[in-house]
Image 1 (cartoon, helix red, strand yellow):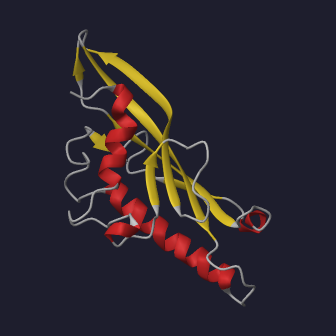
Image 2 (cartoon, rainbow, N blue to C red):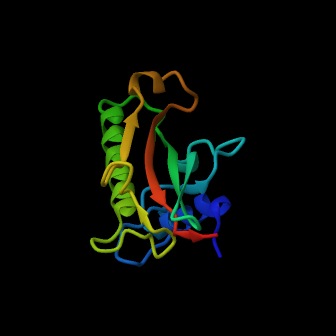
Image 3 (cartoon, helix red, strand yellow):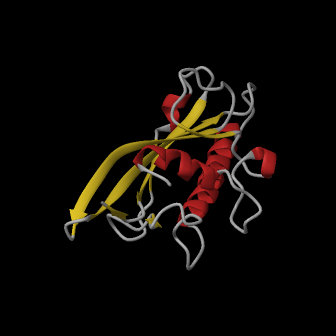
Length: 168
């Protein structure tokens, strides 16, 4: 039985699945991301594109005396290294477009199937609350990514998941 503590692991299991009709995210399955993992590591892999998923908040609501539901607000750090050390014309634009495409595949996977937003029964619903269908991506200014070593485009993604109803 799942509980609040394994919500991030359940979501990452869905994000890393493949062959189910939704976009594959991991490079090993034909997707654009090198790493999709739960939690931010102490030392992220350099020169690897990554999705690092965490919870930004947890809201528990009790209703009907013995019933409660928990809502997990997920936040993902998205990292996309610039793929070339040369200063060829247009590399930054190409990498920004590739980052956009990779994020589009990630959001398609988060939204899930047309009639099943449970992420394979892992949750009651995903990306439906607090506002219906909300997945929010904040892109960091690419101008600042040049000062990082290695140069990397970054963004954050946030969405929520309602856990299956719990009867206490």
